[in-house]
Length: 386
Image (spheres, rainbow, N blue to C red):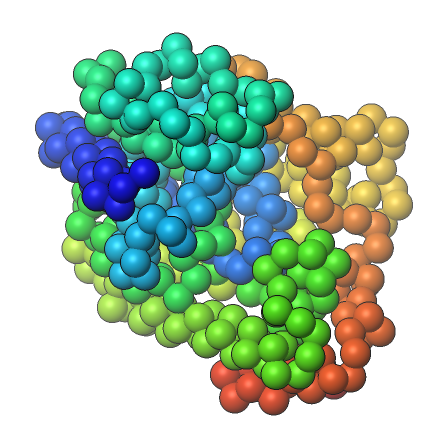
């Protein structure tokens, strides 16, 4: 598929959402939050996502950008801007979550032209179909949104309702928080939607260990030079986003010091280790910083999760946690598309947090710790050298 077609698809969807917002009258209820959960893969994003995933009044999107294997479609600058625009469009329009296929992260290119995509064809695609018959989930949504008045009406109706939060977890925007904030300020109408960025950060050595375990996103080899190169890039993008977030928190972009209605944004940093070891306390801290009460369904889920870690759960609570039943019930009530997956937190939290010490080689640990950016990152977040 041509580069211009992909860019036009994203921009058309974004422009349509922006026009819809301009025609919309500001609601009288409390402004809803547009939440971005931002981190590197294997940094605890799924657990952080549960803060909204388990809220029956929130709409949470699991990796809306994941189908985008864009290396061959865009040059670097176009790819970054397209991903940012796609994220903002996702947060700005509460699009129908039933449109994407059930497993969009397995999507592949399809020979059917985007111009011929029809809603029924999108709905007919499923996770069990051969890869060659699948189409990219976001392209399907963007095409439908850009080319049908029904989707525009749906976008407007969702914008008119500020019942709950719209949240999206992304792992492909690392190093681009400044761009995301700039686009978010332009697109999210002041007083109607606040942009909340949750930046989840994990010890880079533990992150490397987790990547090695799952077998993706790793250095080319386990040799010192490749590990050092990987670590330097990862720590550099994390620090870049931290600096952009600190500017927001300090008043440049709102959050605490920005003028209301100008740049309505908030940046909250979360250490994965704190979230994994003290989930309920960390959830309460985050909601307190956001200035909202913890929803009962979220409180219940993380209470059960905390009890599970302590070995104090009942059989029914274990089943609910394993099946993600809290979100399942909430989405069933609202008729939304649901993909059930198990929680990533286990009773062996110590192994998750400190397992890298015995699993990584001395060479790999030294390679990570040798990078100046990693040393700065670790010092600022309190990660001690090994």
